[in-house]
Amino acid sequence: MRKALSTLCFVTSLALFAGLAGAALSAPDREAFALARSLDALVKQLQTDPWAKVDLPQLARPEAPEEQTAAAAPVAPVTGTPRFQMLDMRLPLAMISQSHGQGDNQAVLRAQGEGVPQALVLREGHANAPDLTRAALEAGAGRIGEDGALVLSRPLVVWDTAELTLMPGETVRLDRSEGAFVLVLGALRTTGARIEGTEEENAHDANFRPFVVAGSGGQLKLETSTFAGLGFGHTEKFAGVAIARNGLMLGRGTSHLIGNLFDGIGSVWIDTAQDVQIRDNRFRSARKAALVVTNAGRPVIAGNLFFGGGEFNAVQVLRGSFGARIEDNVILGGTRAGIVVKFDSHRAQIRSNVVWKRDGTGIIFAKSNCGVIADNWVIQNRQKGIEVRTARGAIVEGNRVALNRNTGIWVSAQRSDVVTRLAGNVLSQNRAGLTTATAAQLVLAGNDFSGQVPRFLSGDVAPQNAAFAQSAGADALVLTAAGVARDAVPEAGCAEGASR
Picture 1 (cartoon, rainbow, N blue to C red):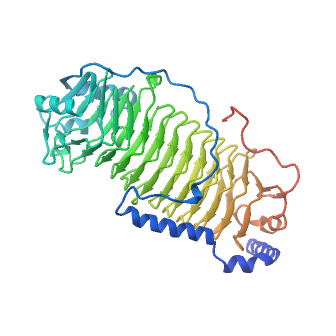
Picture 2: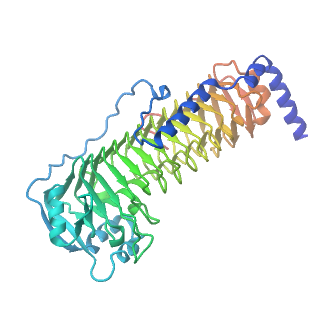
Picture 3: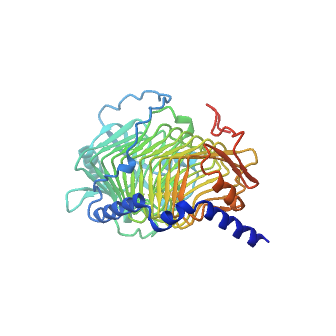
């Protein structure tokens, strides 16, 4: 009986769309294929030039008005003569552990070798690269490499009353075999500089790799710099380049990462940081999730490029990160989902991104409320295009979702009173157009399913294929597993200030 009903729905919907079917089945989605060709060419250029120009008209859209954010307390610039000293590194390590746990701490300590684990500490004042070089050589905490760059053989700690600045052309190498890393409790500023880990394994812990982490109230202001060969372990704080701030010190200034190349690192991880700006960076061949933002307020993730076959998600916004703006990013290949927003990360705006050829889903918005997924190009992914799961007040509008091997848009696990709005989306040549599993109420308006003939709907709304086809010209309709309605269309989205 079920098979017969499914066949009847299929035949009826196909007949109702007979005028479209011939064209839809014979003509490919030319715009999607044109974008795919451009992205293929870009991938080839990136193999030799990680700063190859990204020229995609699909990213162009009107500028959204800037949102007003609470200003952080002004932070006076650090001045004064720098003062360095050697110090037991277990103290600053414990300061990070107070707010972010002791995971992987023992590996860091093992990597220091025998004896008391000493670190070179910039205790106060403002230091530059020549200051750091002199202090490291005098303390026996570093050497000059064959190319003239400083190689640190001990951890470097920038105390909370100090600031270190690296300028264009300056390189600091962190000796993996000696257990070197950078821990920032004050401020680290880089412009056109390079911080990288060496490759020789650490004899005391082969898994150890150097890292850069800002803990407690530390700030990272990184611009047009390169970070390579960094990150190890199972905890985010040592994952590569990280901000692991103490929640009691949120008012001590903001951080930003602008125009950098993160090359072969584990992850960039931002935790408990407010109004952080992550713009126009390149992430190449990340060994873990390329960019992870957790417990953050109003983060801006814009204009970044992810390429080189990352090992996990490109972007994760998780665990109470409120009001994220994820805009104009380009994600090229890699495993698992491209953009993931989950776990009480309410009011995210996911706009004008390109997600192409992921081995997983393109965009996931789950267990969070009041999200907007708009104007994205999500094409040729191995699984779903866009997934909305357990999310109240979500709006999915103006997206181009094409050539995905699973469904174009998936909505599931919604409470019975939840309304999800799908408007102005163009779906073509996905395995199915829209798939649901307990999707509650879907408000559909102005979507183009003509490129999905004959597979419009699947999942628990599949029996509504015929009624959906008959209602295709309606301004708005309500789709549920029980049927299609054209009147009493409920409001979708969230009221101002609401997130639950």
